[in-house]
Image (cartoon, rainbow, N blue to C red):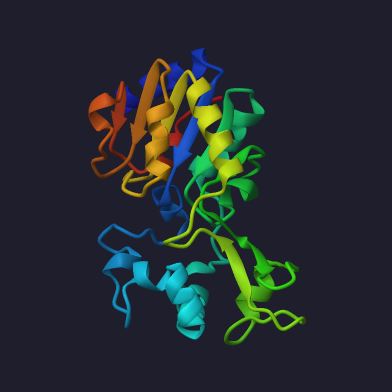
Length: 240
């Protein structure tokens, strides 16, 4: 692993146009479960599979069941940024990192200090009334009982992309621009199994593709550097 860390360190040292593309594995070291690992949400038992519960149809038809799962499993207010989040924020401050593109909805990159964060799947820290558009924060959604309802009577919806919903076009456009202009793209903590997010990697035409993921990904064979170690452990050894 030391040799791989040295290679990553050299890439970071000599480049100042780096983009990071991350998934659930970035946050597992902060105590937030991912979906597809052995202990992930897809391998836990509920009356309905998580991918069904987290769909637009289920949200509209069974909001009580949706919010029971959502509050228990998706609203984690005890998680703190780990070494990966913190190092990425430092790389941005040092002028090395141009953007963090994340599939996560946990706000940990922002908590760590990152400014340019493109949230492909939204955030649990933003919630809106479906009727009048009034904003509600994380604490309100965490503490409310049952289905959250606005003072106008409308149901409140998390600003997260559910299955069957499209990604935000502005976020997609910015992500494509960042990836297509990057010289180094670091993919971390993602199986690259969720589309259309995973398809954004196709826009990378830079010199160095780095993949940091414990499990294999479809992009491993294209990587100039492949590290199969916990991402926080890797980034904790990077010097700026």
